Image (tube, rainbow, N blue to C red; front, side):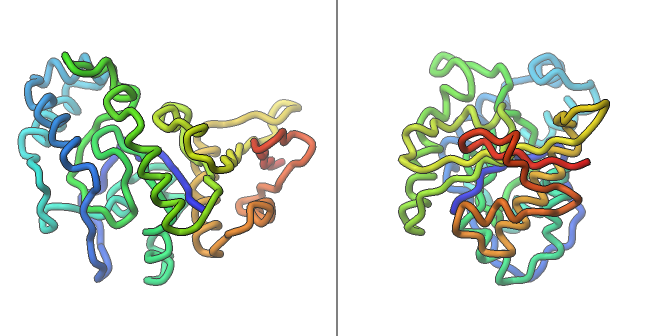
Length: 255
């Protein structure tokens, strides 16, 4: 069972990392192409392109200018420790054992606008480049076009290597659009998390993000291999709701 999640906008550069072997991202050549383009933008350009504050634009301008490929391990942070957002807080990587990390390395994939498809222990340098950014050049119209079928081809390889045929989609729509599920020849299960509010079940973004992290941790730590075992998830008060679920979109609700 392979899992895909989205990255976080925030990068934690001051984090304690256990004694583990950092691996290198598999799409460094493509990342280098994107970096070459990003280095041509001024802070003002980045502010407009990414719709971010001047302060964040300067920070990311400096990050791009300081970045180079191929990456050197000493300058990187393993992705699963670097990203700092609601999903990753839900994962709580600090609670993972060495064996959990090794298992996650083979089953968890983080979709990235700059790095393509990251494994948890792939070393990255701090950056900001969301998949939905309106970035284009003479060779591509947006990042979805740039990455094309590269990401699903890597997922196919991971599925085949582990003799698996199930993909659990815990990514946002913005990032999962970079994957073409029909080309995977795998069953795609998409958990959805809803909270009871004002008389009905609704998806509340911050809670849904945290729940995706809880679900990711649940699958990895329990070595879930059979799809129906996902329905046993009951973290933070969420439970599988058969009435609201449809096909392979499985709804988990909390009152």
